[in-house]
Image 1 (tube, rainbow, N blue to C red):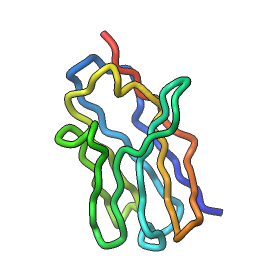
Image 2: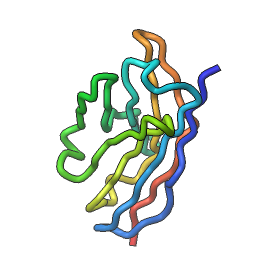
Image 3: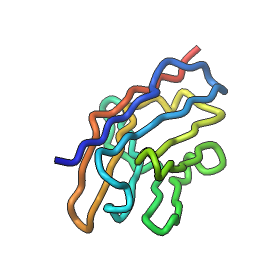
Image 4: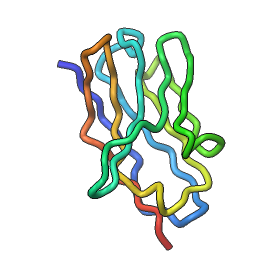
Length: 115
């Protein structure tokens, strides 16, 4: 059973920074890609960033230049460094791992950006 465990979410002031972690129970190279999504209360789940097995990285337009996705292969962990945070970044951040059309999700970690 694949498990993804997110951590690092907390309350942060606007303009602040936060680093989220997604620990995967298997070798991350077993998956086509590891991605971050986010879901604000009452809204749909949105794509944030992804890194595929070859290292190709993609970002949502709303976070380009502010967020950075990276991975530690030895730790089977994917990170999301978030800088210049805005109140609209407030959401539950979820990690996703996919093998073709099969998707695995973590439980999420909550980020609140507020003064």
